[in-house]
Length: 209
Image 1 (cartoon, helix red, strand yellow):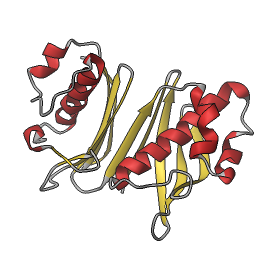
Image 2 (cartoon, helix red, strand yellow):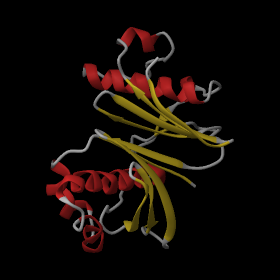
Image 3 (cartoon, one colour):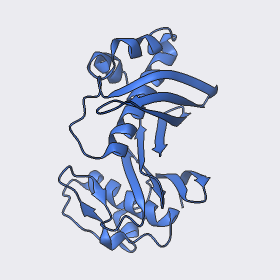
Image 4 (cartoon, helix red, strand yellow):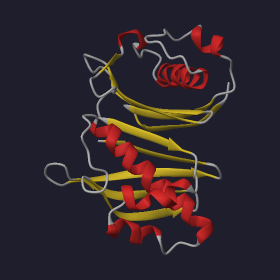
């Protein structure tokens, strides 16, 4: 069972990362297929993410998941708030019975360095640029992942990543983990803090508020 990482945030909230090594049939035994996905890898990621929801909370009602017009999956009665992310051979999920949540998992890539002007405000780019080149890709990935987690936490679409999702401070509490002080600014400014965790080829960020 390749549970790559798990964390109990509090008695109401848990998250996990699953390394996908199983064939599709393994997940189909546990997970209902609610929509047609023809691409093999995307289908496998879809199944693994939903499998992980029930691994984190065994009473999670998978069969009740619906899709909003923004494509965000949700439960009509909101017995559980949840967010899922996929990247390569990994699926990540966070579930809470009380808080709205968002999660994102990313594989660091040089591509994000070229895209920084598109998703980072000028003041945010200053948080990344002082880092040495060998760290810069990871830092850029952390900032992108944090904004993706905020976007999923909000869940209603129509968000400007540069203007509405603002990062004020990046803190490394340990070499492989830390937190980001940020704000959601689409309406009034709402302060947020997002933990993150890094591995050599993976970055995970999340939010539960």
